[in-house]
Length: 413
Ligand code: GLY
Image (cartoon, rainbow, N blue to C red; front, side, top):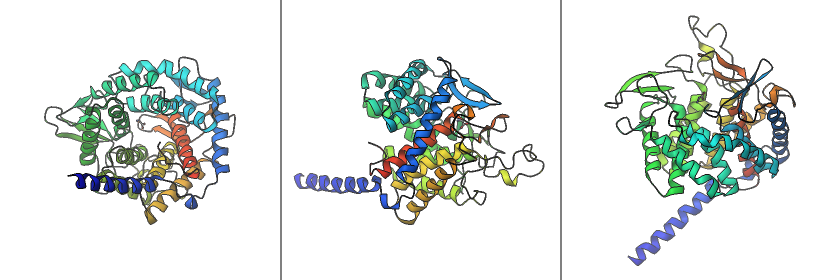
């Protein structure tokens, strides 16, 4: 028994060493310089100052349309991205004013921990309070918020469907975006020692893997279930061009979500799945040269009778590129050889494209948002070709991740 446990410890030691190597930076492969990354982050801080001026104390920035700042209340799904962006920029600069500004927004956001009417609590609370906890280690201030939020999120879980409900209406809709809310749950188990959050996250991810994906590893946007027996009522889209199309941001949420679930669980099935999603995205014949995807991968091929064919065949979505860049940087650290180099190369190209015209705004313009040319929802005629707070958040996150790679640090402490 004693020998067995010594063997076990040695084996675990080598697994951890391999893990350490996998997630450590391979700096000689990095093509973007520290000066380039620092310049983008410093300019992001300058833009944030312009943005901050236009946001009332009790509101969150959302977009900038027709020369007007559009803000939201804290119930809106994007409310965590602004404090999250401020916190990443505090991490970059050490400037305490950014931390104070973020804390002001956390104060108005905290009440959403009781909100059981949305599945978006991971976006809202983990991008914000999760980063605050990571950077300040103030467990007394932030643990309870994350745990109460996680409890609210799992109130939307149905064990027959084996998934968390996304929206009201429909029958029991689950959208691919919901993969992004699972990190709040895996982390709630870390914080509390209570496995139920993590178990629900894993079950939800497995159900999504089974039902949301087509054989080519593209994802439907919405799977509508019958909550009585878990059967599928419909495979639909809400924000894509048509039910069978590949809505671009949905593909990015899936890639990020399964990469994150591999990090959180070490389950190789999620890594394989993320690799397959990445292949769908990067090999897609409609992926443009600059790697900033169309709002829907099928948009350029829309038939003439599509309601979007006359106006929306060519819109790009910078938010998709930001999410993809961040996810691909992480996936690069879990893979080796050519495939890993491909992910790094693609993320670098995306960051370079986003950091220049026409995507990056001139300083002082764009209402203080960093990026232009994102798409909220074309079918809803909402937020088309505008800046979006989440495009900026994931762009900043990707830059911070790249900076960590340059410094030889693992992406996650
Ligand atoms: N979660 C909503 C969206 O991606 O637009």
